Amino acid sequence: MSLFKIWVDHSKKDSFVNTIRKKRFAYQKLLIEKLLETKDTIKILDIGGEIEFWKHLGWENNRCTIYLLNLEAVPTIKPTPGFIQITGNALALPFEQGEFDLIFSNSVIEHVGSYPNQELFATETKRICNRYMIQTPSIWFPLEPHSLIPFFQVIPHSLRAFLIMLFNINYFPKQKTYKAALATSKSTLMFSKKRFQALFPEAEIQVERLFGIPKSYTAIKM
Image (cartoon, rainbow, N blue to C red; front, side, top):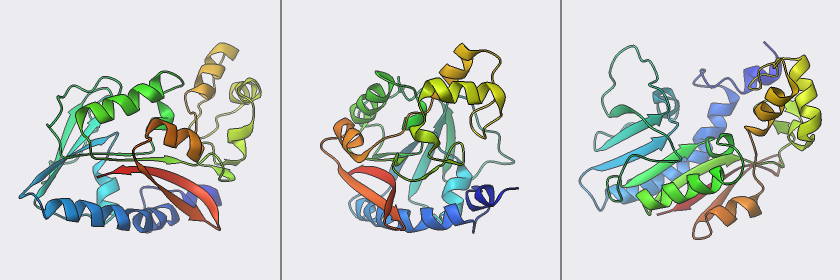
């Protein structure tokens, strides 16, 4: 396993990436706890969420139920108290306004494709709930987190497609045709702070930095 893969191994509780996540989540946790001061119990919809993500953050709260929404059910060894798995599409959430107290999402919005999908993701989030925490990696951080190749995010899609036809590039699987490779490349579109803020103009944008460089952005409205 490469050094980069060791750093970003999400399955290891104390990996570098999970250590960074804990620091980023500290502020978000305070906001969730503040929300709990006003309610006996709360329901959180985590779009694209996994139980291990919350476990690695050290989350424990028996007054909070987290609904993990994915396109397909994520297999688990056994049911976990406080977590409920549901299936659905982030671009057409099968819920009405007021069903959840908070919407949470970590590194999903960059994977839904280009316009109008990213805009629809934001619209659906705000339709369901007026409180949310939506995180996405920054386009300006040198190490592109999906390919694990420095500056891969600034390579034109036309050139990336040729690379995807030649190699398995971590999150971007090798494709046989240029058309399929181009679609794979364009399936992940990262954000600058300005473009992310444009989707969530009413939100505070929490900027996570590493070595002084923006690593991720989180749109927060509580």
